[in-house]
Every structure is written in structure tokens, then in C-alpha cells.
Length: 280
Image 1 (tube, rainbow, N blue to C red):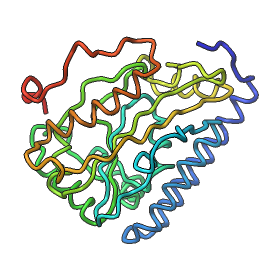
Image 2: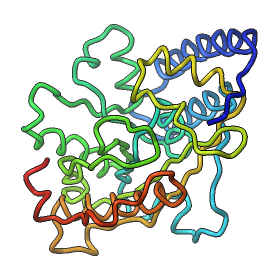
Image 3: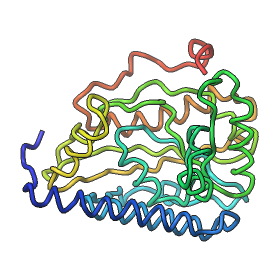
């Protein structure tokens, strides 16, 4: 792990720029037309890119990947269900930069003054965390967005890891891709320091959000390796349920995340749809 840190003045400057950035982002999202997905997408892309720029976060891709691995949307009239491993709050900026997508949010946010309006204008799909077993309304809301050609992103691990591995995926929200006949885009995220070494300093798995923010602004540079894996089309697996689609996405992301991880690949723990079916 790199011990290099930015100066205190740099950290303070970044903090001030982030505060200004957040107010600007809130204003821009507040002003957009909630019924104009193209405008919303452009604003979301711009906000994500600016956030990464302020924090000196660089995106890296494997130029040897095929076109199917590029962050592009298949031309099938549907949005994409974008799923990624969850390491840091930076993940949201990364995905927003690549895809004009909305995210999954708590239902309570919908009632918040100003913030609720901003979230609605950003196309947020709200879920009721107090009734997590009742997934049908959640999947219906996501499927409705996908059918309108609006992509939705979520993190199927349901919480952050340290980035060196992948936590077991939850299958519940993969049903929305089946309901909407929409493609699934698995995205693997790996974080590196300025020296090109895998780093866990960007996570808030072991710290609170404020501590994580201080760690990140203390890093001279952060590099994010983004692997946009092959799309998964539900129609290519006519007998598939949400558990199989979850397995396919999890396996694709695990292959990338563990490729240069200090942790061993859990190859001896085979993911299977039978043993995992009781888990939503």
C-alpha cells in the first residue's frame, strides 16, 4: 500500500472543490426536465466525470477487449441493468461517467425536501428497505425504466468490500432484467494507487464515510481499472431464472477482480443455482 499523501493544502482545496461540486450537481439535477432522459443522461455523465476529475481519479480500460466489452448500450430498445462490484462511493461517479444511468435509492429519499426532487429528476428507482422480501414492486419499477430505454445500475453485493475480492451477489433485482427482457451489463471495478498497486484505501468497508473521504483526498492519484464484461441477454437463456443470471454476472466480475488480487480466487467454492436459491 502506497504511503504517499497529498499535502494538507491540497486536501483542503479538494474538500472545498467537492463542496462546490455537490451544490452545483444538486442545482443542475434540480433544473433538468425529469421527462427528458437524454438531457438527464448528459447531466449525469458530466457530473460523474467532474467528480472524478476533482479527486484526480483516472479511468483505465483494456484496449484489447472486443467491442462487446466497451461501455456501450446494445441497440435493442431497452435500457441496461448495470451491475458492479461495490468498493467505494467513487463507484457511483465511475458508473455515472460511463453510463447515463439511474441508481437504486431508499424510498425515504423521495420525501426529502429538494433532495427528493433532485433524486426523482435523476431517475432514481426507489425501494422500500423495510419490506425487502417483497421484491415484486421493486423489480416492476426497475423493469419500467428499462422498458423506456433507461439504464439502471445497482450493486448486487448490497454492501462494500475492500476491493480485493467479491462478496456473494444477491439475486432479487436480476428479475427485473427478465421482466423487461433487458440486457445485463456486468462491470468489474479495481482500484490502484499512483504506483499502480492495488489499494484498499478507497473503500469504506472498515471506516465511515467521512474517514473514507479523507483517505481519498489524501491520495495523490487513484486509478480505476474498468472491465465492461460481455452483455448477458436473458433471451439467450430461455430457461434461466434470476439466480442463473446472477451467477453469470458474478462469475464474469469475479474473473476480472481476482485476476491480479492478493487474495486467491475462490475457485474451490463453485457458485451454483441450487445452493444459492434460498438467498434473494
